[in-house]
Amino acid sequence: MPDSDPSLQERLREEILFAREQVYRFDHSTPLERLIIPGIAPEIWVKREDLSAIKSYKWRGACNRVANLTTAEAQIGIVTASAGNHAQGVALAAAKRGIHATIFMPRTTPRVKQDAVRHHGGAFVTIQLVGDSYDDAVKAAKSESVSSGATYIHAYDDLQVMAGQGTLADEIILSGQGPFDAAFLQIGGGGMAAGVSTWLKKYWPNMEIIGVEGVHQASMKASLDAGKILELEQVDLFCDGTAVKKPGDLPFAICQTNLSRIVTVSNHEVSQAIRILWEGLRCIAEPSGAMGLAAALQEREEWVGKKILVVLCGANIDFLQLGHVAQSLGGLNLATKTLQINIPERPGAMLSLLDRCFAGLNIEDFQYGKCSETQAWPVFRISAATLQSLEAVTDRLLASDYRWNELSEAVDINYRAIPLKAELLSNPLFLRLDFYERAGALHTFLDQRIRGKASICYFNYQQTGERIGRAMIGLDFPSPQELESWTKNMPKQGEGFRLCQPLDEATTNRILGRF
Image (tube, rainbow, N blue to C red):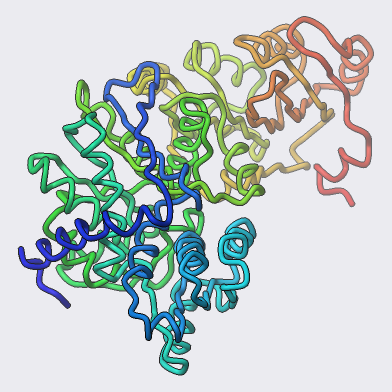
């Protein structure tokens, strides 16, 4: 493994200078835009690599490496492995230089990235789908390189590839918007972080460079902490572009010197950053592309009055994944908590909690099923425009003697596994409720239509961003007569709600486990 010494940095700086002469034969520079987020203290600037020909920065390194092939190497052809974006860069470079490329991709690669590789490479590209991870594809590609003699183009562990990525930093320097106080750079294998940090540090040596990894992808962080390269057993694939089990030798050596630290971000934080990029710049980032912003927002209170740089490094997101991202989020609030709160299992207790502790907050998710005669543990995901507003909730919970757990990453909550014990219910009624998504509408319905008449035994609601909120609610009445009276007198629509409709018997039986 190379030492983290000045000679390696100097070689990389020289290669970035040479790359300036090569990469723009293949594609054009990308803009640097300011992201305005109301109420956010740092001044955040976004490098829009999503506006390149392949919707990712990866064309830079791939094209620079392919441009430097000898005539003999070009005649034999090239081979590479990629989860998608590097593959597109290689395909673009191969087609423009007129050489053949064999590209190994994991079988889990999103269809949009496979189609894009075929689009950019055309007849010059052959795709081989192998294994379920990037590392499986790498093994197959290297084996092909040995057997065929084709040059292997590494996605990140190559000086000329890193130099190509460094040209995006050159454009930042030349933009005239600097200097910046800090840059948050996402890391998969580390090639972009190494190339970009080397060039930024050359011109702004006091700038802090912060690496960013997914919570369950943090191979660089583990390696830097250990002082040697470590390989993770497995990595989360939500941010598929950075799903790498171990960093490259060259990037590791450079990141040891250039990075002050590494921040890890959750999938929910990344999803929130995707939403913010859409709201602020009308662009859609792939999960890995939004990681830098997710980290900057995580630390936003620490960067008051400072100038922050992030790289939107890719926009090749599978359309189906957009639905998952959208469903996991509510409004454009930057501070969120998922809380499971203990309340007594008695009529009115849920509304009392809402009145005393949640006034003025946005409830993005509400899950509850009755599982005890005496205690209830409803789950709420709440959000606010500022961390201070959100922290005030826990102060109010303490003042009101409520107990709670924070469950922001709980698997059962994320999969909406809502438990319900049917044997605890006396006279249940399940409703579909469509209410107007505005402040107070749901609370008004619960207060005016349910308080004192029934207890809530089930609640399933998730904010979708529509003007209409949709919830499934279970009510338990003291007697069959009261259930019948309430059903008979309850209008199908009214103040604050568009539809209140009892579920049919078959649906009710499925909820109660009666098949």
